Image (cartoon, rainbow, N blue to C red; front, top):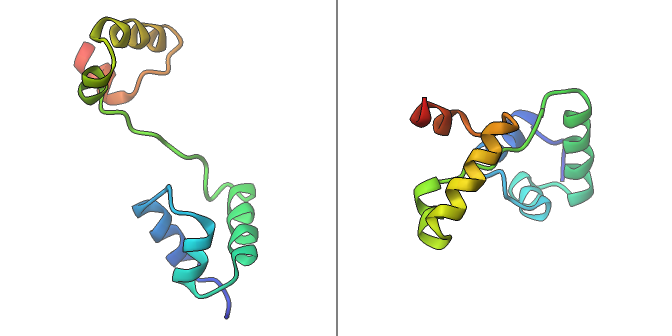
Length: 91
C-alpha cells in the first residue's frame, strides 16, 4: 500500500462515477480509508465540484408514462434544472 495517485483516482472516477470506495482502493492498491480521505480533500479543495446523473429521456419514457415524463420535464425547465441536451431539443 502506498500513496494515492490523485490523477489516477480522478481518471477512474471520470470513467465510472458510481464506483465504490472499496473498488477504488483495490484498483489504486491503497486502503479504503485513504481513498475516502483523498476524495474528501479533493471535494473540499474544489477539484471535484459535483457528481452528475445523465438521463436518457427517451428511455425514461419507455419505463414511465410519456405524459408523466413530459410534466416532469416542464417542471424541471421552470426551475432551470433541465439538462443542456434537453434544453437544446426544446429550443
